[in-house]
Amino acid sequence: MVRKYSELYLDARRQLLPTEGEQAGKVARMLLSAASGKTEEAIIADRDLYASEEICIRTDAFVRRYLSGEPLAYLFGEWDFYGMTLTVTPDVLIPRDDTAAVTELAIKRALFLPQNARILDLCTGSGCIGLALAHRVRDARITLGDVSPEALRVAKKNVHDQQLGGRVSCLQIDVTKPAAPFLGKFDMIVANPPYVTSAEMETLEPSVRDFEPHLALDGGEDGLDFYRAILDNFTGALHPGGIVCFEHGIHQEDAVAALLAEHGYKVLEIKRDNSYIIRAVAATKPVES
Image (cartoon, rainbow, N blue to C red; front, top):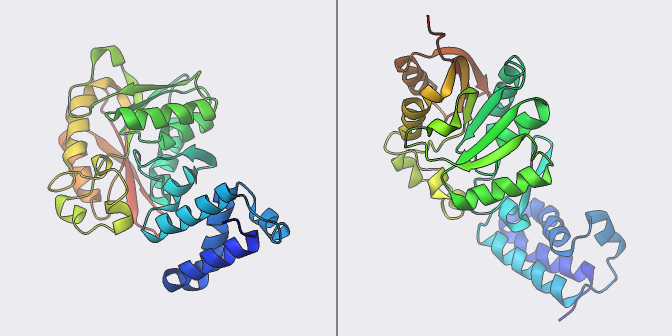
């Protein structure tokens, strides 16, 4: 049954009130805007107009999915990160403010790399880190790598949508296996690998545990399996003097720094997130004598 936009909004708000409280109206407007393709201002202006049956059905579905715990990014099919609007599906992690720390750290270090630097973004997911680097470091050539074909499809779409196909490529790369010789050498490797411990996987918030890809979350017993794999298998793909930048979990900075030291790297800098929690590290591979 078709309803006026005002009725759609009030119905959504009523359903959201028990869980969202004072935020129910804001969330209702966001969901109705996404379902209708109208701005929130246009919805207010059109409040006395009847929405199509398709919009009514889509709005009701969005409300149900939101109440089930599904993240807004998956409902909308896109999310903003570092000035970009990126396609996001349940095949990739949702880009979060946490990842801005390693992104900023990598950009800062990449600005001092040689001209036409080659950068490898491993466990790329949506491609958010590598694409942010491509926007800020205009001469860099960037490879986005992920083991998941589904994630790579999302990354390729984002490369296309950001009009960066001339400098950014996508490859299926399994970091648990030695780097393929055809990849050549890179000046920087950046990664936001899976780092949730096996115990933490059981206690994740439902919106993460039930909807986001476990392949991109589960870092093994101590959360460090993929750091070991990257350092074991891709150190040889990094030029001497090259930079590696890792995002890591809360309180993992000492363990990640120890792994870097074991592989001969020197830590250059750590980076805190907006909550002042250490979330990223940059280290350099020694220059061979």
